Image (cartoon, rainbow, N blue to C red):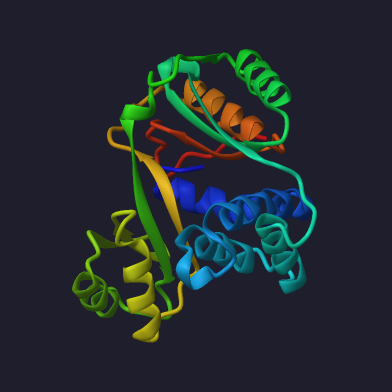
Length: 247
């Protein structure tokens, strides 16, 4: 779930702990394969591949799985052809949803996304209907118990970062997509080890809904993220820090 807020951070950690390990690996393997196909198997010269590998390592994916996914992308091993598709739509309360997928079957993915949206009180929009409400930005997170914000701030800004802030137990560095790898490399060379690093799509403005509709939107996002072909769901809902989602 994008929109780097305290809720997103907590949700991400809970999801990583609760979700099926195989499903997480499947999504990451798809991303590695596509990244390698598009930009080659050398992670030093392929920023998208390196980002996907960082995600794989954060999920404790075995190196053998990573290597096989790269080789499938470069054609050294036989693999499935994946296509990137982006769906735009709306959830309860008119919340904008940007759904990014990787699929080997366009018809299946379209049907699944449309079905989940419909059952969750949402609907598909036309291309371009909500994508302009989001911006891509690099998000690099560090453990606030290991490092100080001032130390990260100095190194990050010198490398070209846009912003550094402490959110709950994390120090979050934000960059432009173009400067993402430069900033990440500089921070690593300075001795800082990130807990996560990826390029996200975040809403430029957030909307507030009542508790009932907020819960409906978050449950809809959860169901979309459970689809095997869905890689990421971004939304423009402002979720209060103290919000608790009922089971």
